[in-house]
Length: 225
Image (cartoon, rainbow, N blue to C red; front, side, top):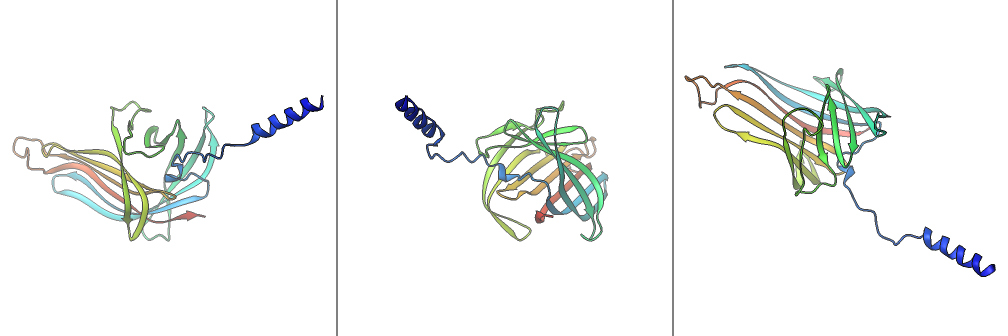
């Protein structure tokens, strides 16, 4: 009986020991999700309303993870409040979006549209359909590794660029979009350039912007409040 108990105790002790293998780094800290985190971005934006009619502005966004909750699928969802300011002193509510990790993918939902912004772990061989969770047409994203990437005077030693779209037929449209994520920080840069060129016979191929938007976000501060 004592021998049986001895073997049983040895079995329990051995079963509780680990093999010393470190857990795999899935890179979730490329977009740290935690209540009270914030990011402040300097924004340059130009909106094109028609031929020769455009409006440019500079301002700031402050994104704050204010709370989290369990969604219908049992996954943790983070609520992000975006505020806007002209001077970083007076902030006004701008919009709300959510972030969650589902099946190794970072999902961003805003105005009833869900986009797969990032896939973990970050690997240059990864590509995915950013619109897989919505009804829009397929939009393939890919990753590009970066080193010593500088944004607004800050250098990030470990960063990856998500290439969302690189299209310019120089006749009717220009669609150039990317995001950069830094390890331990999150989104540090976002570039969106979606333009429609005049396609009338008298201006076809002249790259006269008919409508569209150019928006460039650069991180200037982040942390916890």
